Image (cartoon, rainbow, N blue to C red; front, side, top):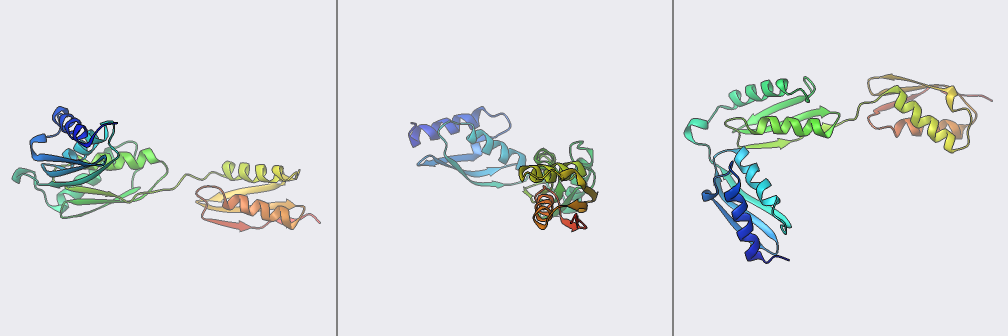
Length: 217
């Protein structure tokens, strides 16, 4: 197990080795395996690179960042410029669905919101804007909302009914409008009806369920 002193040396060496970081302006302190990075950097991208460099060092338990982004005079941009560039770069990023992510910029700090289906899409959006000139920070408030398909809902309902030894699962039909599910068809009991509706609600991404099921008897 590394001592705090050894960790401090290793993190400092890793920062020196990382070409995208100017380690001369970064101080490293370590206490009980917790690394604190202090000082200043020239861009938000450099700040995240420094954090990632420290994370690569074995023995580091946690990282506290006190790094300040001090933009050089030539790197300062207005919030309107940054917002425009952010929207453009998101539009050029193929893994981000068009119009899914919204941008707000205040004093160089970019806040991303909206909704995507997958984590890699959310990560790609944040990665796309953090390199922009003038950005001092990024808040990722993008929500994940898995895509809903009628076949997925149908499969969930059929599986739940089959687990209950009900042989009428295929008599339940599912239609989908956006994230709204409508159930139709016949079931043998109120218990079966409840199983079907609960299964629909249990499908990721479903926002509402309309129950038009009828009882066979």
